Amino acid sequence: MDENIKKIIKAKDHISIFKNMEDRDIERIVQNVNFIQYEPDEVIIKEGDNSKEIFLLVSGICEVLYHGKVVATIHENEPFGEFAPITHQKRKATIIAKTDVKVISFRLNISLLENTLQGFSILYKNFSDELIKKLEASNKR
Image (cartoon, rainbow, N blue to C red; front, side):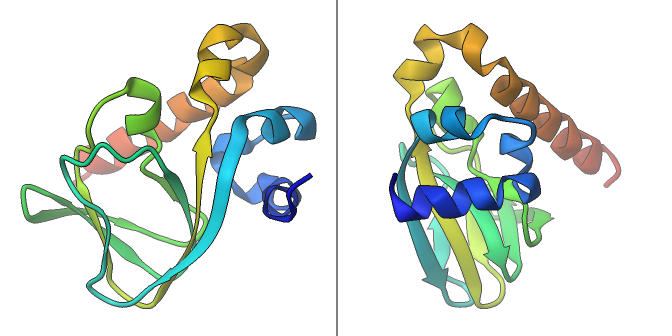
C-alpha cells in the first residue's frame, strides 16, 4: 500500500469524508495522494477549472472566493474541492491560502464509485453531510 494512502487511513477519523469507512474501501478509491505547501495569497483552486483533486487542509487558513468575493473560510481538518469530482462540473469557487498552508490532495477513483455505488454509500453520506454543513454555514451569513 502506498505510504501516503496509509497516512490518510491513519488520520481517517479526522477526515469527515472518510468517517466510518473501512480501510480497504479507502485504499480502493483514493489515488494520487500528495502533500503540498502553499504560501499566503497562493491560489489552490481556481474558479472554472476542470481539476479533479480533493483537498484536506492540514494546517493554516484558506479563503473561498466566488466571483472575487470572500464567501467562506476553511480551517484545519476541513475538506474542500470535493464536489467538482463527483458532479463532473467545473470548480465553482476559487480557494486561496490566507496563511502558510499545508494540504493533502488526492483523487478518487470515480468510475469505481459510480460502478459500485452500494459499496460506497458511507462515502456518499459523508459527502452529503459535508454539503449540509457548508449550506448551513452559508445561510448563517
